[in-house]
Amino acid sequence: MKAVFAAFISFSALFFSCKSLPAGNDVSAIELLDNESSFYIAIPKNADQDLITRIIQNNIEISEKDAKTLSDRIEKVYCGLNRSRNSTEIQVAVDASIPQKYIPSLLNTKNGWTVSKFVPENSSNVYPVYSSQGINLAFPSDKLVCLGRDVENMLSTYDRLYTAEPVYAEELDEEAEAKKLAPELYAFLEGADSEIRFCANKPQSFLTILTGAQLDLKLIDVSGVFIQDPKLDRQYILNLTFNFKNETFLKAGKSLLTLAFGLTNSQSEIIGSTTLKINGIKIDKNQLYKLLSL
Image 1 (spheres, rainbow, N blue to C red):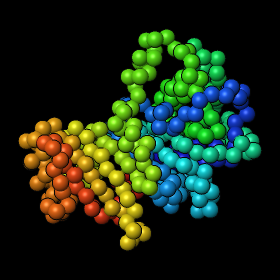
Image 2 (spheres, rainbow, N blue to C red):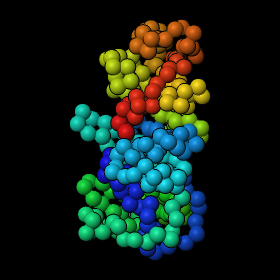
Image 3 (cartoon, one colour):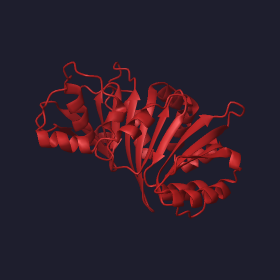
Image 4 (cartoon, helix red, strand yellow):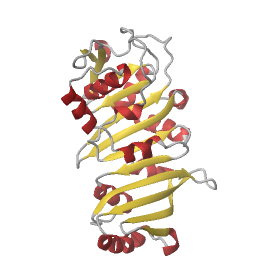
């Protein structure tokens, strides 16, 4: 993660002098994420700019002032994560506003970077891809940053959406469609404005981190919202939604989750036959940083 944010801060001071693309369509960062991560999170600046500043500061050696300057330029960060016992694989797309007047060449061989050129299939557009210590990143426009897993596929997605031309064969369009986020997940993450939103498609490991207990609840997914506590600046209120495979698992899971979170029945609600909502969980910001491995 340190290398990831170090790469991003490097870009905050430059705009790459590469061939400009013709005018095209606006592309949102979230459109660049694929559906191959097990955990997704959207962190908008409006939710808590201090959190973004602290995330940057906790992952790279940077002053508080410089971290604040960088966070000022970020509108929203979208992350997809895959975690194993020994590593975390990350895919990041950022909506940002990067001044184009800075052109110092920081991502060069002297600083440990190599650059390659990527041309999406059936396209004439060229995108530089910068690599260092296993991290790949690219800047398809002055308002977007993408890095981590499958950067070239992210660039292909950008190129297709930006040009709005049928530049791919039909079967490649179908493949691209198959890799897009599910509409419900897309809308949920994109709608994050004054809160942090996340969804765990493989929720068992997430629950273990959150509760400290091994809970086998037969869940389809877990989604949640972190809202700044208006009464305590250092605290979030966490609201969770659990989608179970069937009603039997929901009934058993409700009791286990209530015990795990130490909640009263008044803070939980069953919706339909497979959905459980638990609201009002208080979580310290430092707990959130640890939870998200930030």
